[in-house]
Image (tube, rainbow, N blue to C red):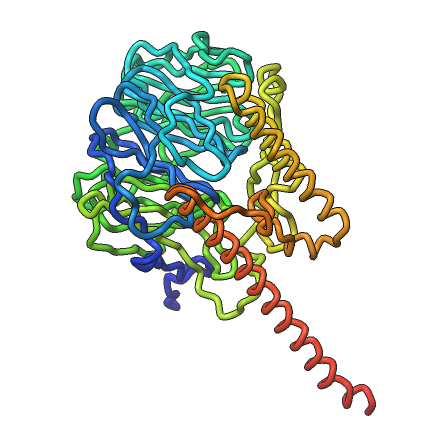
Length: 499
């Protein structure tokens, strides 16, 4: 009988974790000391939001993703809640919109200014009032625009439509009452037609998103949180696989990447992250390796795929909250590759920042899968100029309706965007990336900063411009190398063809 080694071919077998340098971390952040089992952090390609410790209400910080280093203790915050903030989530289709929930029983939806929070933000765009006890968890619908789910300590799951004209919404679209205890987690399938919850009553429930009907309910045995179970959506009663991890008592945060089929498990109060590869065939789950660190994490934020650095073969990025040091540490999961060109096999088409449905379409009973995009540089811009102009106009129109003095700002930004569009129309697609406009402002017309906040804003905008130019240069370098190789191949093939 021949011996066969336990070897399985996988392109992710050697994925490794790379922590950011000290200069690329966020230092001096007063991270919340709440004992809620949430991530306390939310990230998108523009902003990093983290729930902070404060007195007299609840607040969270919103920082530019490139605002690394020491954070000013007096940095403005989003501070409209009367109780501690328990969860925050960015709108997947609007990088300037974030939802928060609190012990004050409300959910609030905030519009972040284009250049970040430069003064304390206390007035939300929408306030959702319906829960009778503290709200512990919120989730955006994965494909429908402006549909938000919330769950609280009143054991209710509520569905909200943010497209209604009211600023204070007291009536949810639907209230789901299948739970007998606190909901611990909530997750959707790909098209958002169904969602699953885990509950403190030791049951997993699978429900229809539109109707709220209960499709399946099953008890789970591994309640000590030191096990990992993999099951089929068709039958939740029997797990396909159950594996004991270790004897630690910390809560496990699972993060699944559907593009690479990798599962990351990060323990609360632990510095290590285990990762596995999931498959539809036995043994269903394959342990890959473990990232080890002496710095324990209180929570983790995850960057959407469109914000990853594909030039370094980064397939996942965490933002690790280290409470004991007031530190937020980016952690990149990287596939080691020698080639510097785009690796298409590890970057399949992924969910974009464009909704597949409007709120009205979804409420009428329609389901659609996510709008996909390629991560290949230059193949598809995540946010086109027209989309950005529409976003700016819609945001400022909303603000001008509820806050005086904003209409003039909307007009000025509209003029700047119009000027930007005229310049772009006279250039090719390649030349658009070299436009002298940065973040909607003509650099030649910039006036000197008059205050410290204006100076900080100018600095961050300059850093953003430098980063963009560096990325452009890197893409040009890669293209030059490809052309050089093609020329070399042509020269080498010429003597052979002459023979």
